[in-house]
Structures are given as C-alpha cells and as structure tokens.
Image (tube, rainbow over all chains, first blue to last red; front, side):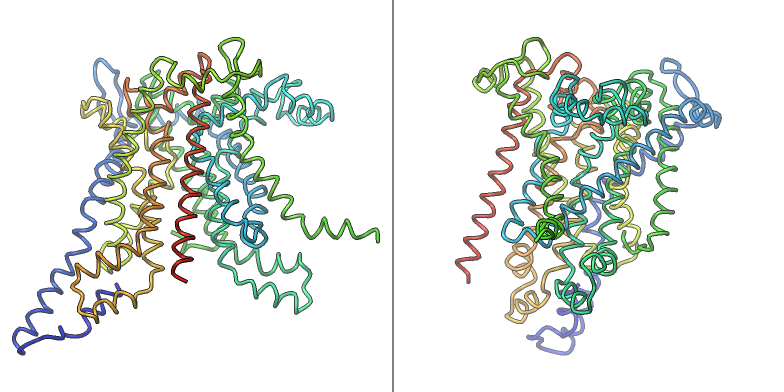
Amino acid sequence: MSAATAQAAGPPPTAPGPGTAQAAPRRTAGRRRLTPYLLLLAGVAWLLVFFVAPMVYQASTSVQTGSLDKGFKVTWHVATYWDALREYWPHFLRSLLYSGIATAACLAIGYPLAYMIAFRAGRWRNVVLVLVIAPFFTSFLIRTLAWETILADQGPVVRFLNRVHVLDVTAWLHVTQGDRVLATPLAVVCGLTYNFLPFMILPLYTSLERIDGKLHEAAGDLYATPFTTFRKVTFPLSLPGVVAGTLLTFIPASGDYINAELLGSTNQKMIGNVIQSQFLRVLDYPTAAALSFILMAAILAIVTVYIRRAGTEELV
Amino acid sequence: MQTRPMRWLCRNIVVIAGVLALGYLILPNLVVLAFSFNKPKGRFNYTWNHFSTDAWQHPCGVADMCGSLTLSLRLAVYATLGATVLGTMTAFALARYRFRGRAATNLLIFLPMAMPEVVMGASLGTLFLNMRIRFGFWTILIAHIMFCMSFVVVAVKARIMSMDPRLEQAAQDLYATPAQTFLRITLPLAAPGIAAGALLSFALSFDDYIITSFNAGSTVTFPMFVWGSAQRGTPVQVNVIGTAMFAVAVLLVVAGQLVGGRRRGARS
C-alpha cells in the first residue's frame, strides 16, 4: 500500500505535457485496481477448488444414501446425522474432553517456557527457540512412537510412578489402569499435549515478546509484587497469544487420531479414528461426511463462544 | 538466612519450569536418537537390547523405506514451491492493497488452518473419489499445496506489514522503476518471511500423515510407511532417518544464524 500510494500521490516527475500527465496516472490506476485480483487469482482459485468445493461436496455426500457398487444418490437422508450422533456420541465427548485437557496442559506447560524465552533467556533466546521448533523436523509419527518406549510397561518412567504411588492415584481417578500407562487416557492426553505444545508456545512467545520491559519496571516502581505485576500487566497483555495458542492447539487436537491409535486402546478412540475408519475401511462415505460436519459444528460453536468470552474478536 | 534458597527458588521458578518444559519437548528426540543405536531382540524396537551401529551403516536396508523417503522429499519440494509461489502472491495482495473481497479472502486463508486435518482430508478425498481421479502423487501434491499455502500467506504477510515503507519510497524518489523497486528493495526485504513460509511448508508437507492418508490411494509416503510399520514393528532405520532429519534441521538453523550474524556484524 505504501509504495502504491507514494506513486499515485504525485504525477511522474518527468511529465512533459498536461495531456500525457493526465493519461498516465489514469491508466496505472486502472491497472492497479486489477493488480490485487491478478495476484490473488491462482491462490484463491486453488483454495476454492480444493478446499471450499470439497466442503460443499461433503455436505451433499452427508445426505446421500447408497452403496459403493450401486453408487450414492442425494436422498436428503438426514437421519444419517442422528444415527451417527447416537452411535458415536461417546467418541465426540471423548475427543472434546481429551483435547480440552491437553490444551489446558499445553497452556500450563507452555506459558512458563514462552515467558522464559521472552524475558529470561538472554543470549540463549535463539538457542531455546530453535530447540522448541527443531522437534518439528523429526516426523511426528516417529516422536509419538518414542512415547511408546518412554511409557513402556516395564520402563523406568512407569516403574518410578509405581514406586511413588502416583499410578494408584491416577488409577483411582480412572485415567490409568492397573500399573500400566500405555493404552490409557493418560497416555493419549500426554501424547496430545506433547504433539501440540509448540503450537501453544510460539503464539505465546510472540505476544509476550512484544511487551515493553519498562511496563514491568513501572509496575515494580508502583510497589506491585512480581505476582501482581504478572496478574495485572503481563498476563492481560499476553491474552491474544493465549487465545491464538489455545485455538491452534484445541482445533487440531480434537480431530487427531494418531495419538489415540498409537498410545491408546479401543476404549480411547476419538472421533478422528471413527471418521478415518468409516472413510478408509468401512467405505461408508455419508456417515464419514456427517461425522465431519458434526465435528466442525461442535468446534465452531466452542470457538465462537470462547472468542466472545475472551473478547478478542480482531484476532482473525 | 533460611529464606535465601526459597527466595532464589521464587525468583527462578519460571526458568525451572521452562527448562522442564523444554525437556518434555526434547525427550522423545533423545529416545529416537538412543534407539537408533539399538539392536532390538524381536521385531519391536521398544526395549533396549544392545548397542549397534548396523542401522546407521545400512540406512536403506529395509525394503521400500528409502523409496517412500525419496517420494516424500520430492513431494515436499514441489509442494513447497507451489505453496510458496501462490502464498507469496496472495500475501502481497492482502498486505498491499485495499480491495473488495479482502475480508472474505482473509477468512478463506484462515479457514484451512482452523480446520481439523481429518475433515479436510476426508472431504478432498471424497471429491477426488467422485470425480474418478486416480489417487497418487498428484492428488497428494494438490492436497499438500492446499494446506501449506495459508501458512506461507501468514508468514509473508507479517513480514510485509512490518517493512519500512520509506525504503521503497526512497527507491522511487531515486527514479527506480516499479520493477527495479520490487526486485531490489521489496523482494530482498520480504525474503526472510518467504523463507520462513517455505521452510514451514516443507516441514508440514514432509511430515503430513492425516491428510495424505485420505488422498494417497496405494502410494506410500514416508509418514505412511512409518504408520504401516508401527503395526508390524518399526525398523531401527526409521529412528536413523528421524535423527538425521533432526540434525540437518538444527545444522541449517545454526548455519543460518551464523551467516545472519556475520552479515549483521559486517554491516555495523
């Protein structure tokens, strides 16, 4: 916008006569009006064809009936939605619950780390940032499989947790079973938390980094304790990062099925697992489509309420 | 006297918590590294047996693994190119122009990032299925460009927004043509944002499993190979590849830092 306005503001410096001076800006102005659309053309077309169109198509699939060999026809069979909900509501509930807990855990673990990088890391800042991002470059499937090793039944972690009776408490809370951690809700939530932690840390860090350090000094000068400074100054200013981070964690986590598949048992299956198996194994496309839409609607409702309450609507 | 350790603890509690969180993030990578030197007893590489460098000496000793790896790398390169070109153009339009439909375009860019992967993958797969398009390399590539593009737009747009407009005005005052201004001022200034977007799309494309699994048919990318092998028992070579990727990424970032640092040093 800057260069464009600068150019449009004054006539070309070497304008020879009044006639050409008037014609030239008008022609460039016409072209300039078209430029953004030309720039957008390819990208927007790509998203319209391969993102929006499939969604619309998915909507029509969800009200179709038929079978793979006879073909599917639109019959406005809305009952697919009710059947899907009736059969799979525990999976929906579990997905939202697991991803909600994982998001809270990400915030609790990620906030101190983001705070440390922003204010306390000094010359180590870049090193720590690299360490946060670097795990991204090892396939997340491999890293999730590593959790199977870490949480293995006879592994040091499980034996230690058993020794200090943590597993008795978690078993009492029904998040683990017996002296196992693998194939329990705890393992799945642990994996989800791990997998989406960087998505929480990076937005938190960007919003914390923008805070002027002088504000902390000012709060201290006004006799605020460090805790009050955090509660009244730092945290409110980092709220956009908190909102962005929780959304970036919660939304992908609620659709995830990798962690439930690798770290959980059949009792921890999430809605992603159901959609995946309906689509790729059962080949029941209408049900898969209906489940996708219910998931999207649930996420949309939760996110809308959340953004309203957080009061940061200019985020998008 | 007694309160001193307590006070130290209070002052550094954030650092301690941060370091613990960092440990949580890094631990799996260390496990992957350690178990790349394991010689597992059975098919499953989950318990330590004894030290061996077999896997490092024969990284391609497993059937089909390196084939899937090269396929994934090729896909990632093409997807990065496509997403970076489309995303950068879109970002320039959104950051530099006011036009009708701008808000709608912003929403369109935002939506793929706010959509669970399983929903995107399933819907695109349904479309391909009904168009009777054969699943394979091209369908995966289309899907990857689709979900990587938004991330490029966000990275490049942020960079363009933070650029000093006076530099371009200065170039124009010095009689640079619009093309010259763009090539010699705007593009170099936007380059870090474009590079960040490209790097992110490479990582996202290379690592994607969920969307790919809906659009791959019988084609096997590296994440799909890992997924398949998780059921039968993962070969140690998978850990070797994981560790090597981690090392390459860290080296690239460190080299980038060093080059950037030297340039900054030379300038000042």
